[in-house]
Length: 419
Image (cartoon, rainbow, N blue to C red):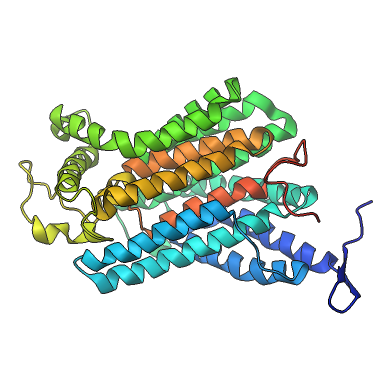
């Protein structure tokens, strides 16, 4: 029988029944976990609304239970705050400082919501996490059914949103494929814990094959790299921290060299690459040369979108190389925030990798696979400050503490506060 959810109010000497707010908190996260995969498929930009709504509901409910606000990991919170402050400072030398500051405030709200939700998620007991896990699996299965039905029936849902040709349909599902390529890792961890073991690795494998038909190279890339990381960590417990830290270093240190080498090898005109990939090689090469011009402080936060005014001429292939963003998170950080911003980002990634390494059981393995997969996708696609992308990464990362397996010892950092 579960213990009574009673707490003594020290100020008034009264005993409060906390069963209802605890049940409400569990229900909030169950709804969040079930809706996340579905929202990511139907309307990926709605991930921002879902994350903020979860925070607005969970924070006061947590206070109702504990009579205090949630306290995030102090080191990660400090590192993230310093990074956002540097973004605000770097807005001063952006081409449009007002627009940049507004964007800083927007991403600051998203980061704040995520930082508040992590300690709340970590405070759930094992029974609540088990319920959240079941709802997540249900939502993930329904999301896969929706994608399959859309493709099989000729995109009827998509036609409700836009009268688009086939190319735009693929772009629309490109984001959905990326989202599912991240959500699959917490789901895989859950199913492993339910006794399926190594067989569950077939799920990201099959999803990787499906992403090829959706023409989502970013999703395929993330699934392949994530699967490789999961196999490495499964084979050797101590490999996890090395894999995650190496992934961060490769993203920020290796990406500029890789971009230059790809361009030098002529990949921007390679017939075996899709036109979009060829164009991206040109954009990356252009971005690396601009990074070298202002390597310390960068061109200013959100300065990527203004590069076209400074460099309006197309490349030799006739394609515009000054895009709204470099389609690479590490390159965008270095381009806009310089070496200072890149070092801050690497420090933040290192702290997150350390935190992940302390998670118990198989949750750690698939959390580390998620970390590497998100870095892999972010390095070759999407803008660093796109709200839907930031909300997606934070939301999927939140599934790690929400579905963490019971700790074997009381020292597990995700064991949470006592119920």
